[in-house]
Image (tube, rainbow, N blue to C red; front, side):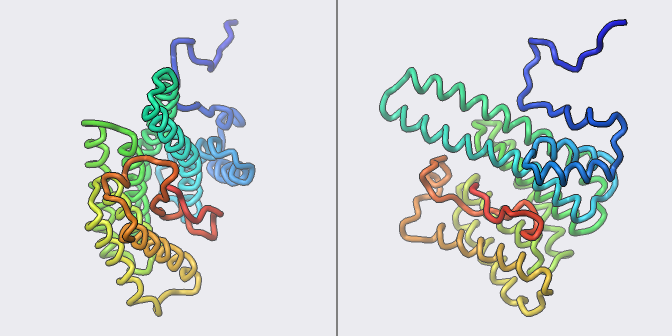
Length: 297
């Protein structure tokens, strides 16, 4: 009887690792088991396996609970975050070596950077596929719709960060469209103090500043969201207070960064440089559900 193998042929290259080990734990993994294993993987800081388990959950084509939604977000945010940080560092080193005229080193660095970019692209396309095929069509509540469209905007933005030419424009256009769709629902369905609405405004403003090089629009959006939330701060529930005020602080931090006299022009600020302070983004999930409170984006 021939041996069946799951190993791809030598000529097949993966943009990012296929973490099949999680799916081999059980041939018929149950929904609840997948959620539990995702939590276990999070505790063990094995985020790639956390992603695989949450993809199983997301593929059930039903609306996720708040906890499940946050688990999915945390999983992908950690997987993409590590590579985005690597890309920024490697790009900064590449720029420095170019300025020194070290061509042989630049060639090596460029190949290494492209490897990281391939992984980034694979991860982004992976979650965008899950969002388009499963999560967005299954979303029922306004909160879920805003969450998933915001997430779609985020991952197209991540693609735009390293893409060039037409690819960058396409990713930026799709990101803008997703953020606008999320905003349209948020303005009618969520209170100005809602953490997801505030997180959307935070990331959308970062998009304007870092991708579209539009600091005026970025500042206007961030300030409007902050002011609207301040006006209704007394209506905040105790359970949302910590989450909302954290994101409001991040909005204010970005406004301070973007409007400071030392701030560089937007076109320069958008250039990757590991030595520069970067704009703050919304946490992957409610702070109570994750230790991550500020993403270096």
